[in-house]
Image 1 (spheres, rainbow, N blue to C red):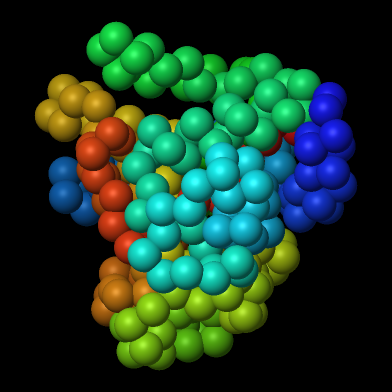
Image 2 (cartoon, rainbow, N blue to C red):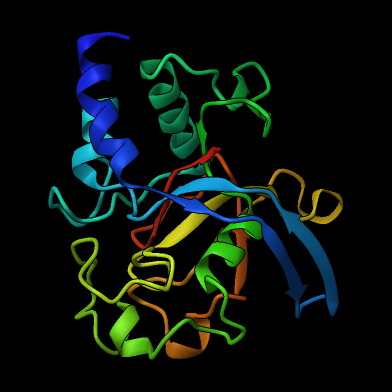
Length: 230
């Protein structure tokens, strides 16, 4: 590992929370479908990826709102997984994503030991942190959304965390997940979760699912956080 990688190691690993194994029932109200997923133990960052961290790894900052401790946003799915691959290489780990530049196909190898985006099942399971409702707390106490955000992102970790010590799982910015949404209907569209600073209360829930194009779609209320196999 090079010096840059060594300097990043402690900071990043200190922010990873161990998520225990369990089970989660997901649902899609659009197609009236429910399904159950078993979750193996994994690590998830307690914070959204900040602009400062993103810049240290990529030497870029695509964000619309600027500030070192603001979440990085206006990133495509491809840019998010490129970031994960770059961190994996710095740590001497195997990247979780293969990106075919010729056809821009992105494949996800969940068993690789590098950093990655959470699956949507992992994301919802971690967001709920043992709770059973649509949110893990009172919305104004846990999330930045349309009624309290002043139409901007906010520094990470300012609202109350959930029971597992994860901040901003709801509100501030939406979070890319690794999963395809529905290949037969939407092709390569990927899922994002959690709601953002511009969303109304009804959209900022642990169960809300959205999706868009992995290479083209980027917006000022969509970012990500990193996960890793235990």
